Image 1 (cartoon, rainbow, N blue to C red):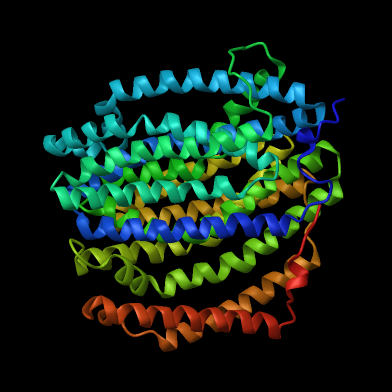
Image 2: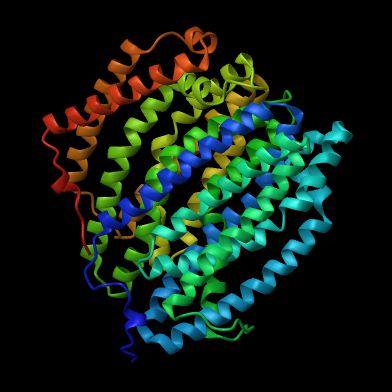
Length: 522
């Protein structure tokens, strides 16, 4: 067995809390830059037909990226990577080389096919566009530009998984900032030159993929695990990843498939429905990104390591820590999104081409999404327990059930409640998915609920209710937010956020929660 230091880059005892804080901090930076990006997007495109066209063209490669690169591929790749790290540097480099070669070839073929079938992809993701030929043609043209982004960002995700497995979390978590910067530069260029805003954004997406890969590739090289890519279907590690990949495909991507279904049905509703859901979803993604993605990112390598060492008690304690953190941060976020829907949407997006009606419609969607924020956070925390133990079939069954619930409710609600019905269906499916995973981790013996979890839940609930009462008492009416100038909204919203945060933190402190209780090491 090799004793090379590169093969043991992660210390024997690491602070999962510190790792989560690093990822969450970088994710916060990416969310702030993302809001700046969406502020410009809403200013220049609002909820227009061009906005719907770009958002569909942007969603298509992002859907496949989240489905394959960040979803199924990472869930199948990281546990096997953890095993090869334990075998030594030579074995690890060979494994990385084969996976890199196989993945690169697959991506090249998929990208070529996607560009050639751009119009067909558009009709799959937005079938309602067939009634508007100009809208369909514009979206298909944008897809031809944005789809190659899938290849670059998937390789970026491959590099990020290697870095995460070696305890390097900051750089991968920073890469979304580069996407946001590229899109803001593209919009600024279009505004100053008179170029088409939607085409400029599409080229910005493609440029971002190149920049993100160029940013991470040298850092992987410095780990000493990079090797020239090579093709092999007989390599034991590649075959194991392949076996795990197929069931992981749906198991890790229920949220993405639900979002796809929402887009398909929204394309059949009023013009602007896709954009209304997008702006609301961007705010929903704030707690999911800061809490769920950050926790899930550090939990998968940590749990994979513990599963490989058969440390079941430590495995359960680590999962318990993740759930406690998810509840502490996800519950108040869910309540805040529901109570501050109009202030948030109006303050961030209501300007330029965005109208008060658009803001009101997006606010309704955000309030509906908020009902499912907490379970969507907890799903991201519970699912890695199965993947770390290389069990992809059980979460696959749960994901399929959640998707079925989402489809059924979507078809039942969207004709009556429009885009709000789609958001409500997503929230309900999130609760079903969480409940199935919760029962599953207990049944499989991965987790045994602790009194600490119950105490944390009670404290978070009480503090969230108190915070909600303060926000409800201090916040002006919805009409205020849609009527006053932007420079009035910003200080009002900032004051509400500060008041709510301080109330929540003070209530937790009074209830007996201390920061030392949130520390966790493995």
